Each structure stands twice: as structure tokens, then as C-alpha cells.
Length: 123
Image (cartoon, rainbow, N blue to C red):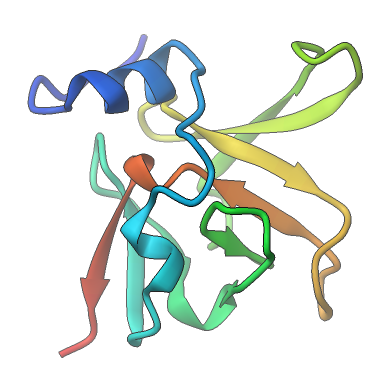
């Protein structure tokens, strides 16, 4: 059962629970460079550390590593080919897709919709 936050915007609900996608290049988090952490906009669980964020050129906030055990994955064929989709393990909110074209040390790119994240600066 999805734990939906009633305070989400219409765009957040579309992306997180109807598996939509925000337009590339629209997230303010693309340019976020401060030290801190990224949390699920729906349930608040910490998903990524800022040390794993990098500029992928994709137009979405990208990370080479998530925190352990925070996501569940499934195969998505929406575009006609297999992609690995990931959801928050705590609330089942859709966040994005994982690709194998990221930097070392993992070689992964967690391509995350910015509307699904809340950045918390390390004070």
C-alpha cells in the first residue's frame, strides 16, 4: 500500500505515483552543489548523500550510489525496451531509473526526478 503524502503537488503525485517524468533540465537540484543529503519528498526517508551526486548531462539529478536498502526495483518496458525503475522502499514512490553508464566506483547512474527529492543541507 502506498503511503501518500497529501501535501504533494500535482506534478509530484504524477511522477511519484503515476510514474510520470518531469521535463529534463527543470529541477533546481541539478545545480545543487552543497554538502548534504537527498530525501524522498513523499515520506522523508534519506536516499542519497551529496557525495554521490554528479553532473551526468542528462537533465536530471544523478547519483552513482544510493544509501543501502532504500530502493526496490522493477523492469519497465514503457519505452519498448527494458529499463530498471526504482521506487522508495518505504512508501513505494517512483523516483527514476538506474543505468549502467555512471562513473566509478559503481558505474551506475541513478537518474532521479528532482520533484521527488528534498535536499537537506549539512549545516
